[in-house]
Image (tube, rainbow, N blue to C red):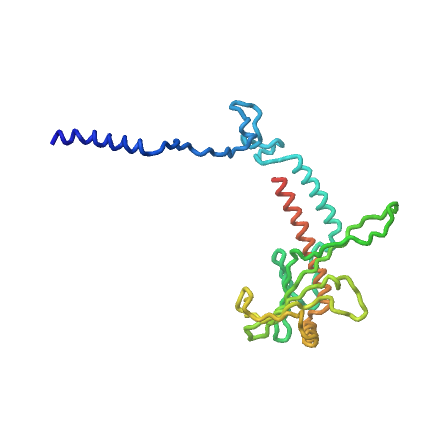
Length: 278
């Protein structure tokens, strides 16, 4: 038995040597080179160096002495000064210190940038909702007919908020609401014509359930782009009979403009406080 066990290493050694001789010589595997992910600026920093990049500098109180540890730069200081001047100018030209009231018995509810006008008439509840965000149309440069030597006083155009608004009409005891999506066409804003044309238009009409907080896209929606003019006129008369006419639209624009300007000033004040960090 012992002689047999002694022969095992010799046999294994002979087999391994044969495999090595038969196999081609292969290069040793080298680890793949990894690109350096650190910025070159940081690589130049030596240990114990006094001048450290901004990213490596230890956090500490700001230079102004307030002790907040935040970032204060000359740009921030100039930004705050600019905002102070801007807020003062906006308050000077602010037309309404408080929101104007709507005629016709409309009750106003404001939630941030969204406003809601509610009125109950003869067994019906009429609700008009609008949002002032992105409600100011873009301004275009006037005519370029002035000569180079002629000096014209530059006056900023008066900004007017013309938001889209939605009219919901619900009859007592009904679980459906007639919804009319309205907007102000840009070519009708600020025009006064003798034929008393409508200054707002109906874009879409649909029925929605009063129990749903969100409107369903599966409900049929009627677009007025290809609508018969007779039906469209009756829809406009339907709104006018419920107090949504040109007078209402003019007052809504005035209310929306006042609310938008008020929110803009509040935004500037919040921005100043954020930049100032005090």
